[in-house]
Amino acid sequence: MVSENLKRLPNRITMFRIFLIILFIPTLLFNDILSGSLGSLAKSLQTRASFLIMFTSYAALVIFILASISDFFDGFIARKYNIESNFGRVMDPLADKIMVISALIGFVQLRIVPAWMVIIVIGREFLISGIRIMAAQSGRIIAASNWGKAKTVIEIITILAILLLICVKNTITDLTGQPWQEILIKSGEMGSALFEIMYYTPYWLMFIATSVSLISGLEYYFKNSSIFEKEI
Image (cartoon, rainbow, N blue to C red; front, side, top):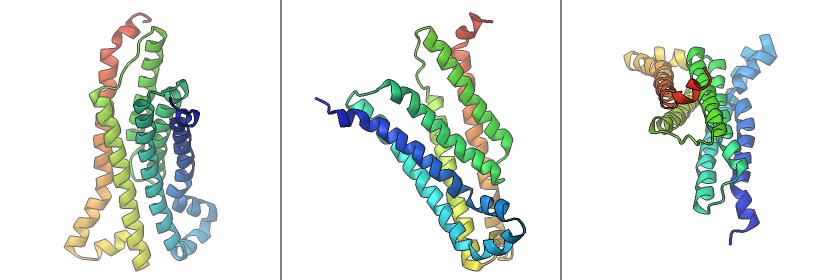
């Protein structure tokens, strides 16, 4: 016999993840918010607040890790005790999408990844959601494909890697009192090479995530094209 509290636990974990996302956004964008709100005073205050900027970047990383872990546990508990609910079926994938899209849009705001990649990822999510809604109206349930599962894993890894790079950059800036770019470029060939790696890695990681997202979206579309044929 499953207790009422246990039945509600997966849904509570899902809501906890949404709360974490609300905390994640300002911690990720703290430096950008500081610059935008303080105007001409931002540069001098940012130098003095470099430790706080570094701290919030680590906080953003920890919050996203916790949110990712919670995503695993709510589904695991629901399946183990067979307590899946209508709330969980709707809100769990929605919370996942909000979590990923919030991070990616934040990276665009910080000018770390290009907007066109994020637009493709978001467009794919809308497309698949539409296909699933249309299939549900016909009594069909579309399960996640291998490409879809790979897409999710790669997106999470990409976001975590970029967050970690942000932490490293802010740590270098805080410890040296100078922008991380200048420190590495002035450190000789090895430093310049490290700068190139740190600068371009987010782009290529996001390019891979975008490519897999596009492939999985096309797979869903062509496998379920019969849904559209009835209407078009």
